Image (cartoon, rainbow, N blue to C red; front, top):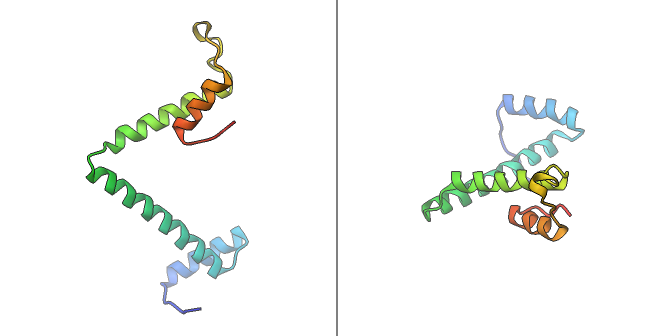
Length: 103
């Protein structure tokens, strides 16, 4: 185990959050560090895709649209639209496209 210096403000925030989340202060700081690493990794992935010429806004909008559609299908909101009935096979295909397996 290593020691590291942090600001008084960060320590106070971790102390407050640790009580609410039922973690030790050290565990709370490790949790925040873990989240930060994951967010930074995602950001780097987005930067690499942007450098490759991929439109991130369009990709995010498409994914959000697919997820909204998949949720609507699952709850049956589209079952009677224009007389269409979606099969589980169709829904599974939509779920895979959204990156979420909900069945």
